[in-house]
Amino acid sequence: MKKGVNSLKIRVFTDSRIAVAYAAAIVEHVVEAEHHPTLSLATGETPSALYAQLVEFHRRGLSFTDVTTVNLDEYVGLPKTHAQSYHQYMQEHFFQWIDISKDRIFIPNGYVNNLQNECERYDRILQQHPIDLQILGIGINGHIGFNEPGTAFKPTTHIVGLSEETIRSNARFFNSLNDVPKQAITMGLQPIMQSKQILLMAFGEQKAQAVHLALEGDVQTHVPASILQIHPNVTFILDEAVAKACKLNL
Ligand code: F6R
Image: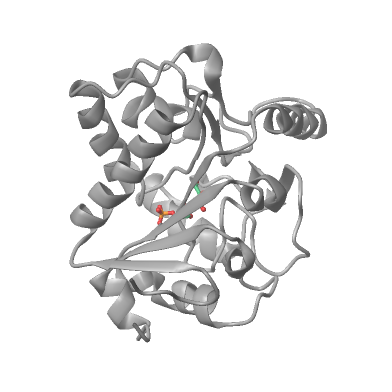
């Protein structure tokens, strides 16, 4: 068993398909083992295959009726029905295919007049639903959720101006760079760090720099994912492409 920094675990798989199957098996275990589990979910390219795998597990009998989900983030200014909203993403990739009850699904709403009230509302939800398993991707700049680099670590739900790197990177999901929202609402680092268990998935060499700094650099606000080094139960699930490119000392 390879151990990384402190008790942080690193699992490297030949390709992301196998890595995703590994992550999905852990999700299944938590869903089955906990009485009323709360999963905290990410969106974007990385976890989409995980949701497909979990839908497959559901077809083979895994039930989500006792599961509560909270999502990490949402764009500001996109209605829930917008094709690129994270509400829509979650419906398309996961929720419409499983037996989760609608009233157990929580996603911050970035399409409200009073964003501060929404942050406070979401924090109350998070307090009521401590996270059993947190699924994370990582931005090429080291962000987790939309906790962007450079500012102080923020514990609670907040509005964030997306960095230029994030806007450029997420432009792949929009018709043009101009269409990418400039702000998001994101869970803060406290509920993430208080999760019982965290899985961070990163695939492809474009994530190498971020993964390298998160694992082997100091814990620093310039690399929000580096804070995971001090969590007691976190696993980095990587493919060989990212592990080789960041020359992980495994
Ligand atoms: C999205 C989120 C982000 C993404 C990250 C990587 O809910 O939390 O932190 O995980 O931007 O995105 P992809 O997987 O598209 O490279």
